Image (tube, rainbow, N blue to C red; front, side, top):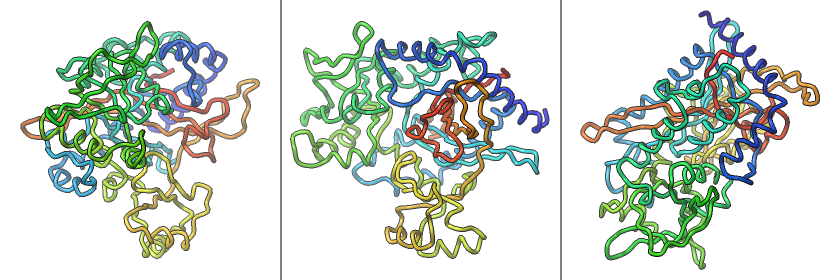
Length: 454
């Protein structure tokens, strides 16, 4: 099918979906919140609809994201990624060097002159999130979609329904361990806006959610343990103190390294550096914990290791004293791009979205060598605002998409294999960042990714 036709269908299909579901948002949201637990309320806006993508477009998205990831599977990368990992978060072994979860973020634009799609990639993340929530979003919407089977909600064509998808995620996370040996660890988990992801692992996979500040390591055995955690009982999350400390043999760490660093210090609720060393490194030295997600993962695939990737577009340019001249030679102004901190996740710390960057600001940021990168802006293929009575907003919409992958690493060769899990859509108005905190108006917010010809 010609790309022009695919582009037309991409837009007409989205408009048709918006028209079909616009007035059903309250009912769909109620179903979704009940699927988390009765009484749950999202702290950010859930969009009226997912992005609906024709399969011919989706296949191009997947191929582009696979190409983006290929350099990280090469032996050369294994030899250099460690220099980006702070000593306090470095695994002492090489057995689980590659993250078991990956998220590739991108925006797809349309080059009308060339008649083809182009892709802009802000970053890759190697922490898990939303792998249960986004399929649940689509499942909650399905009663409003005539002719869409449950199997159509999943990006992996071998997955026939939600229970089968749960089995896939369960196998990937547990990998031979029991559910009561497996926990999700986070700093003050119930205070996090992302707690919904953890609650879904607790409800649907039977895992406990444990506060990082409550984890201890037995100096004699090297075993990690906790005395309490959040579990689901009678369909609700409840803090439970176990009759005896629970030994943690399989850990999925959700805490970000910069937040862990900020929590270290004196005081009764502060994290103790020696406990963290015993947990993140000592348990691996002594073989007492298998880490599904380890803090090192954050650094293996980060903005730092994206620098120089030939498939990353537009490229990330380190902010140095010479950057203003480099941009001028290429015919770009500082305001043609944005500055991103290398060591913060997501869109935190982003500068220049409003066009305030200049050469003086770049030179000021260059005083912190290796701390920032500049990236040229890229297109977003805006969608005309839906013509729904009572929800008019003249500004067009655009979306940032995310594909979430599971990886397995062959123990004998170190070869990495990818399996696509699910997708995410962030809808925002043109002129606003692709960030949940800006999504306040109708049709903005987050949702899943539906591959279909609606």
